[in-house]
Amino acid sequence: MINPVLAETVRGGIVDLRHRGAIAVSDPQGRLVWSSGDVERPVYPRSAVKLFQALPLVESGAADRFGFDDTQLAMACASHLAEEEHVAAAEAMLAKAGLKESDLACGSHWPLGDQSKLVEFVRSGQTPNQLHNNCSGKHAGFLCAACHQDIETGGYTGAGHEIQRQAMAAQETITEHRLTGAEFAIDGCSIPAFAFPLRALAHGFAKVATGHSLGVERAKATSRLMQACISNPWFTAGTGHFCTRIIEAGEGAIYAKNGADGVFVACLPEAGLGIALKCDDGSDPAAEVMLAGILLTLFSHDDTMRSRIEPLSRRPLTNRKGIEVGELRAALPE
Image (cartoon, rainbow, N blue to C red; front, side):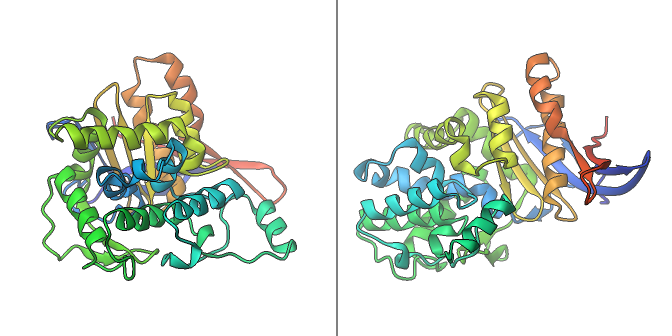
């Protein structure tokens, strides 16, 4: 199947680039209420499923034992930009379990986001450590969950480690997609990554939105993590990031999370829907406007919500002098 064009770049009145992809929108029973493209082809959601991966932290009782607040729960689900408060939050999470930066196994990279802040960081003589990794909150969550259960923390990123087995089981159960092992890969932060059809991902996030068929305790855990992210959008990403902006625009009605290479998931608690999409060429900006476009469709009855989301469904293109020369925009099929 050739996926449809879901976003396009326009210059001078001409469509210059076309971004193909697939989108699935599911209800909690797994019924597709809207789809476009091949939603059965497995894709790697990677960071988009951090909420699922954070479940052992909550379900084991570790989050309560270590007194995690909602900002720290949001950090466990975050792909943050390594702003000062992000780094401090990840360090505080580790400290609650008597751990430190060197216990992480996610690797380090330079802070993301605003380039002026990166220049400041370099000029100040700082160098990044593992707390600056955009996945440090997730990894701190893994380590705290292991400590609480008296599980050896060494090798916690390995596929055979008990914490990763718990995270994999959560992903498999919530999506109702059986993992055979053929889908196994290693993510950028060294943990196991698994491929899922968009249909299964959308179904899983519809269940998160509603608690349907999750059982009482898991429904409480998924809702707690989702609401922590919705209430603290800055801690799920950072200043100016699309995830922060779209969650803020929803004012409680939208949870959204990006993955690498053009993947996005979302859930709408009030509507009881889950969304999953993949931009085929891996463009993250194109995936962002695709998500905004489908949200505009789903909130077609709500003029206030549409007015907040519409600016996010198109992105101006500027040249080196700051002159607007075109735009990237959603182009969903009718």
